Image (cartoon, rainbow, N blue to C red; front, side, top):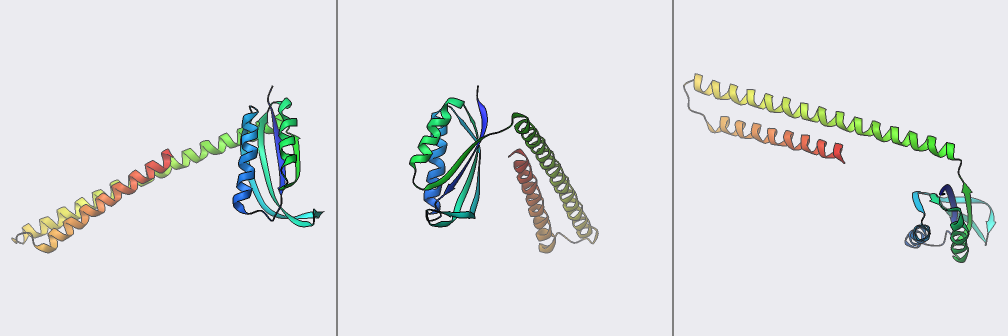
Length: 184
């Protein structure tokens, strides 16, 4: 039966960002090779150590939330110990109740984010419709003024009508972008 684990590692601060990413990918691949799953990788960053380790005062901290079979722990820790750039590691079993509560909170937060995105898309669509209606009214008013005066449509009224059409297109584009963000 798979269990939830948390793995914390401290990487030598002298390694570069690219090499630190390689270490994280290597651990992820080892976990995947042992039928495990990496839920999340939290890169905390450079922190001061409580005491010097191998003459280093700082370290790069990474935390992994994992789902693993208990039999695979020994092999994963062996592969971590072999890597000289990892100066400390700690594997902890997470309490199943805490994990369940955390996943429930994350699901609720995701649902709330979707709802907010849908509301934002609806507001953008309403604004686009309002802009289009305003543009149509302005265009009709300008065309009506030109015909009431007995004058044919001039370049100014034609330019204003074209500008209103451009505003309508921009409003429709912003509404479609908001819908795409809501769906993403």
